[in-house]
Amino acid sequence: MNTENGVPQFAICILEEQTQLTLADLCGACAVHAERIVELVDAGVLEPLGREPSRWRFGGASLHRARMALRLQRDLDIDLAGAALALELLDEIESLRARLRAMGGEY
Amino acid sequence: MEFKDYYKIMGVARDATQDEIKRSYRKLARKYHPDISKEADAEARFKELGEAYEVLKDAEKRAAYDQLGTNWKGGQEFRPPPDWNTGFEFSGGGFSGGDAADYSDFFASLFGRDFRAGGAGRAQPHAKGEDHHAKVLIDLEDTYQSATHTITLRVPGVDAQGHVITRERVLNVTIPKGIREGQHIRLSGQGSAGMGEGQAGDLYLQVEFRAHPLYRVDGRDLYLDLPVAPWEAALGATVKVPTLGGIVELKIPEGSGSGRKLRLKGRGIPGDPPGDCYVILAIALPPADTEAARDVYRKMAQELNFNPRAKMGV
Image 1 (cartoon, rainbow over the protein chains, first blue to last red):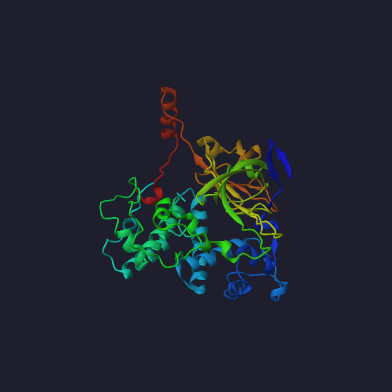
Image 2: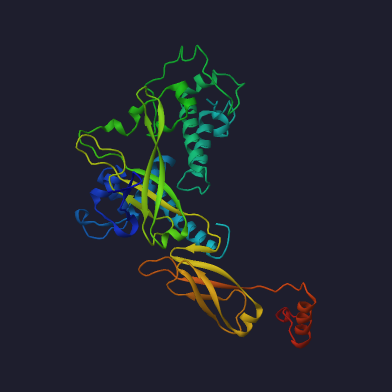
C-alpha cells in the first residue's frame, strides 16, 4: 500500500476480467451456503468452468450476477426461476439500452 | 426529525386492509428495486418502502403508528409524544430485513433499533468481515490512461451511545486502464474488519461513466458524430478527428452521405482487443448569411439538377 497526501492508495483489479472465483470465494462474497450457489448453477444463472463443484471456476462477473439473483429472490419474494427470468430480461433491456445509446438515443 | 407518511409512501389509504398493503408493497418493490429501476433515487425509494412495510404489515406497529393521528404530513418536523410507547409492547422487535440500520431516525424514535437483525447475529469467532459495495462515477478519459481518483465513502456505523452515524472514509483509487461501464473493481481487504483472526472483507466499486460531450459508449466501442462540410462529403477529404488518444486523421471517401459510419480501428476503450471508434458523418450546411454565400447556393441550384425528394416521386 502506498500513500499519497496521507491518503491510502491501492493497487486494484477489474473484477470481471482479472478474477476467477472458486465456489468457496463466491459463497464468501455472497454470504450464503454453497447450496444456494449450486442452485444458481443448476438454474443456468451462473456458468462456471470445470465439471464438479470442487473444480468450478467462476468468471468475475458471476459475483454481481449471483448477488443480484439472491437479492431479487429475497426482496421481491420470488423463486429462483423467477429471478433467473428477471435477470435474462434485465440483460436484454441493458443490451437494447446500449444499442439505443450508441444510436444517440436517450438511455 | 421528519415525519414519515407510511401510507403515502405505500400508496394506500389509511384504512387499507393488510392484503391491500401487501399487494401495493409487492408492486412498488418490483418498480423501485435498485437492481431493476434505473431511476437515480430508486435505492432511497426502495429503502423507504421497506421501512413503511415494516410498520404497516405488522398489526402492533401499525396500530402504534396510527395512534400518532392523522394530522401529520410527510416531511413535517416531528417529535414523539411524551407518552409514546406506553401500552405497546412490540413482540421481539421483529425486524425482518438485515437493513434495519438503513431505517430513518423517525422509525428509530418510534420503534428503536435492533442490530441483532443485522449481519452481526451470526458472529463466529473468526468470521470474515463484510464486503462493501459502492458506485464510482468517472470520466471516459480515465479509462484511457490510468487515473487516480480520490473517493469518499460514507460508511454507516454505530457510536458508543448506539446512535447511527455516518463516517467518511477517503481512499485514493487507481482506476485500471480499459475498464468498461458497469464493471467492478475489487479492493481486497478494504471492507469491514473481520472478527478475531478473520480476514477483512473486500470493497467493490461499480464503475459508471459521466455523460461525455462527444462520445457515446457501447462496451469498448465509442460513437462520435462528426460534422463535415458538403464538399468534404462530396469530394472526399482527409479531416482531423478527436479520439481519446488524441487527434487522428480520417479519410472521408468521396460521395459520402450523412449517417455514413466510418471505423477507426482500435481507437475505442483500450483492452485486448481494444474497442473501435465509429465516426458517423453529419453533413453541416454553411450558413447563407452573406451575399457571396447565397450566390454559391443559387449557383448550385442552377447548375446541379438535384431533386432530394426524387425517391418520393415528387
